[in-house]
Length: 289
Image (tube, rainbow, N blue to C red; front, side):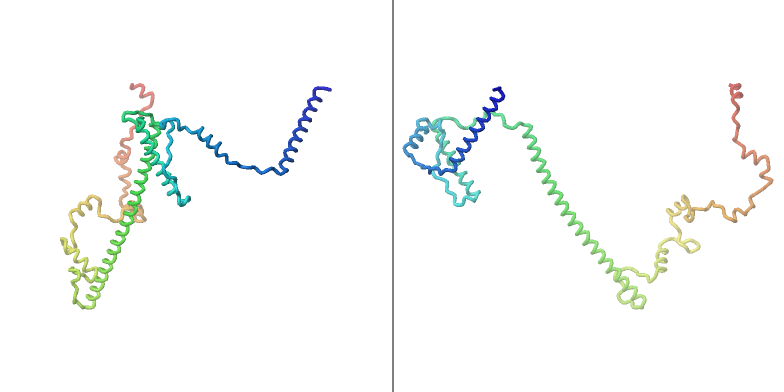
C-alpha cells in the first residue's frame, strides 16, 4: 500500500469518528436531562467570604467605605431622582473616608506648590479656549444683528408714519388751496387768510409778482442778475447749437463772397502756399553737411 492510500484511509477513519461523536452528542441532547438542584451551602459560602475578606488589614490599605443607609428610589424611571441619590451616597462616602484618612494621619490634599503636568497639552487647551471665544463672539454677533434688524424695522415704521403724515398735510393744504380758489372765483372773500399768504387766481398774477421783485429795464422786462450776465458772457445765451455750421440751400446758392480776381491773384496763392517748404534731397543734404 502506498503512502497516499494510507493517508486517505486515515482521513476517512477520522471523518467517521467525528460523525459518530456528533451523532452521539445529538442523541444525548434529545434524551431528557435530569433537573439540576441548587443547594445553598451557607457554611461554605461564609468560609469563602471570610477567606476573601481583608478585615485583618488596616483601613488605609483597604480604603473601603460602606453607606449607612441603602439607596431607595421611588421611581426608577426618574433619572434626576436616581442620579441625586447616587450623588448623596457618594458625598456621604467621601466625608466618611476623609475622616478615616485624618485618623491615620496620611495627607490626602494636594499642596499649594505641587506641580502636575496636565493631561491635555497647552496647545489643545488654547484651541478649546479659542473655540469657546469664537462661539461667544458668534452669539454676540447674532444678538447684535437681531438688534439691528429690530432697529431697521422700527426705523422703517417711523419713516412710513412720517411719510403718511406729510401726505396728509399735503392733501389738507391742497384742499384748502382749492377751497380758497373756489371762493375767489365765486367772489366770496370771507375767510381767505387761512395760510397768511397772498393767493393769486392765475399764473399771470404769479409771474407779475415774481417779476416785480427784480429790477426792470427800459422795455419793462425784468433785468437779469450779475450771475446770469456773467454766465451769458462766458457760455452764450443758450439756444440751438447743433447744425449752425451746416450748409443749406440758401448758403450754397449765395456767391456774394466769391471773387474770381482775388482768387487768381499772386498774393492769394502765396498765402495758401506759405509755410510749405520742400525738403532738400539726400545728395543735396549730404553736400551741405
